[in-house]
Amino acid sequence: MSGTHPVLLAAIAGFVCALIFASIPVGPINLTILNEGAQRGFRWALLIGLGASVMDAIYCAISFTGLSSFFDHGIVKATMQVCSFVFLLFLGFKFLLAQTVKVPTKLDAATELIETRLEQKLHPHSAFMTGFVRVLGNLGVLLTWIILSANLMAHDWVDDLRKAKVACVSGVFAGTVVWFLILSFGVSRGHGKFSEKTLLRFQHISGICLIIAGLFDGANIVWHLAKHKL
Image 1 (spheres, rainbow, N blue to C red):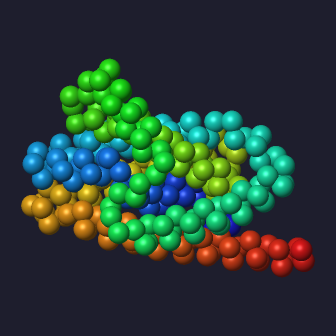
Image 2: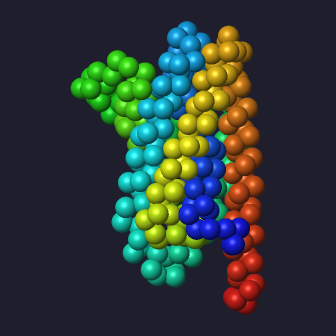
């Protein structure tokens, strides 16, 4: 995709990342849509997803802040590319081998505490605000986008240009909306058939996608090493 326009490439990268990572790990938003979509219908479930998508895009935009000068040094860029390879394989196998839809992390306790405090202070009553606040209090989402945005810039999939970053954030918003649209429709029309077991399958598929991306990343690193005879 070397010939692809930088803005288009950034938008595609953001869309694909969001589409994959929106379904893993299966956290509070997906489970909220799963539980409430069948009861309150498609519109309610989709509004929860839209609120979550807006906050996802905001976290992605925040993650790009301050990264401009970070990759001025070649050693930093190379290190991030290696870390990206390890990160993708680790997550891929973790979610491929998962036995439940929620894979516990060390951030869960802190996240639940923050979410509880935010909900007590903000009292979200609408579906949109429910999705927005739950992502706002999820430390794992912010951490994920910090890592992803750094990796996207390290691989030159997102240029150090404002319009490219805006395109990537827009792609992230579009990708999360598409996922939550599919999930909301499946839950509201499935009458319980769109179960946690189905979400677990999506998680396994996403894990396979991450492993493939990691292997591609590794092959790219090897190719660059061979090219420069290092």
